[in-house]
Length: 201
Image 1 (cartoon, rainbow, N blue to C red):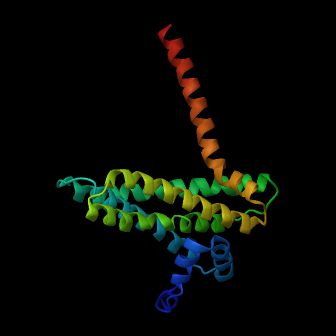
Image 2: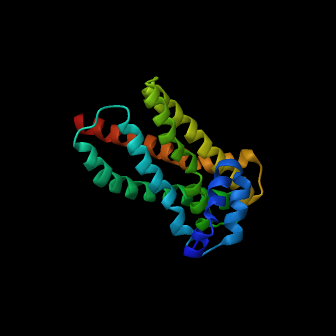
């Protein structure tokens, strides 16, 4: 996605397909295969993080700390998000290969990044409810949950298109990083508890 592509408004296709047709989004990503596509895709979660900070600020009266959160906090969140997205996509890609599908780490990262697009709608939604003074905290939680589900749907549809598999297997591939993290955390907790019990005894 170079400067000429940006000026030609081709990026609007990415936005629209991400929100309306995840299968078409993956086909577009696969067809373009531009050198800067991977780097540009990270602009989606980075922008979403920035908008989420602003959206959460609408729930209360902010202090001067808001500017720290909007700068240093945002930068820290970017590094955490980049690591999380890359690790999750790597686990998805690895599990897909275990299931017998082809590996393509780059396409998986790009797909996961673009699947975050619906979360950018949180700020407009919060502006509406904040202006109306109508249960803004409740709708912040509700809309956040709704957009997480929407993002997961986009990723699952994209994975199904990528590997030409059913929605069940695509969902399993998508959920694998969460299962892996949960199992790992459980074993770390058990081992830590055993060591602590041994130390206290």
